[in-house]
Every structure is written in C-alpha cells, then in structure tokens.
Length: 276
Image 1 (cartoon, rainbow, N blue to C red):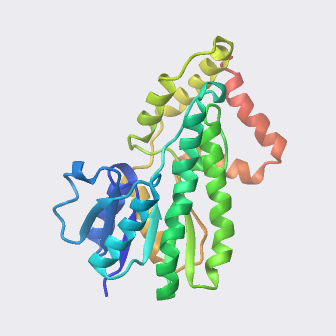
Image 2: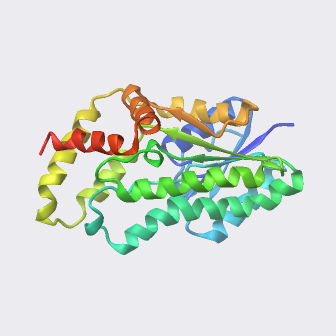
C-alpha cells in the first residue's frame, strides 16, 4: 500500500520541494497551502492532492485532513512545514505580529497535530515531522521572536515524542540552517517595514554587518532539506533531531552544545560587537 504524507506550507520552498520529492518516490502527497487556487506547479501529478490549509484557521486544518483521508484512504506522515521568521527589534514589533509569529510557528503546529492524532491512534501508527531551525537551538541578534517560537517548538516536540511513543506515533524534528528559499526575503521585507527607534541604530548596523558576513556562504538547498525530511520519514530509526546546514551552521550548533553557557553567549556578542 502506498504511503501518504500531508505537508503544510507546500506553496513554495521546502514544502513544495518536499511534495515533489515524496511524489517522485512513489508516495501519495497531500500538499496543503493557504491559497491552493494559485498553485500551478503541483497540480499535474496524479499522486499529489492540493487542498487548502491555513494553520491559523482550525476549520481548514480539519477539512484538509478529512479530504486527504477521503482521497487516499489514510495518512501516514504529517510534516509541519508552514512557518515564517519575524526579524527585527522586539520593541518595534507590534503585538499582533508577535502573536502571529506564535500562531503560525507554534500554535498552528499544535492545532494540526491535535487534529491528526485521532487518525493516527485509530490506525495505531503515524509520524510527525516538525520543521524547526538552527534558531531553535542557538540565537543571533534581531531574531528574538523567531528564536522564541522555534525554541518553543523544540521543547514541545521533544516532550511530545515521549508522550506518543507508546502509541507507535513518532515525532521528529528537522533543523535546517540557512536555505536558498525565499524565506529570508519575506522576513527581510517585514523587518524593513517596521518603525525605527534611533537608539537601536548602532546595534542594528552591527548586527546587519554580521548577517552580511554570512550572506556569501553556501546555503542548503530546498532539495537537500527535502532529502533529509524523506530520510526522517523512512529510515525507521528512533532519532529525534536531524540537522542540515553549511559549515558555519554546523559549527554554531557544535558551539551551543559543547561550550559553557556564558562562554557561548560571549562568543555571540563578540561576533557582532566587532562591528560596533
């Protein structure tokens, strides 16, 4: 029997590439997005079913899961990929944008998992793969809200993995570093649209120099991340975290795990303070 995967945020980037990757490997794919009527790339493959799912609207979550089951008979894997990054100074970020960051990156994930768990329990198996980020393990300047949402996702996913293990429902986390998708561009546009408080200008300039120093590095492609997601879904291992990124990203992850806490914090401070 063909396996079936439901992917949120499949209109672009990692989500769309993962939909193609799983379909190419013979899976049935439920590719969900907020505006399926705009999709023109995925609708020519018979084993890809496109439907609406907006993680901020619970009724669309329930409907997408039900439609996917009606189409393919069952769902084996859920990939929570929908997300975005709120970049910039916390003080200048309106409250509604703070809430949206958590609505999409945390509460939307929780709502989607809650909605699919009865199906997984009934079939006595299932896999949940949550797409996190290196920002869920270490922080950088200007991403306090994004990091907060991904730290929350990491803690939720790890604890949930214990809770669901005896039900034969797996939970895994994929942690990409920077990728070549349009994620950063979207986040940057939101940053540029925020009001300015001049007291922060010196810091913003230094932090901007830090990010500029990273911009020329080789980034992970959406295809490479999709391959890791496929590995997580199919390797049969009880591994919680899967990491993919460039050399700088891998070093940052290693530093976060190996250095004493204050030494790590001081290292991050030095990475941007040299531009002050």
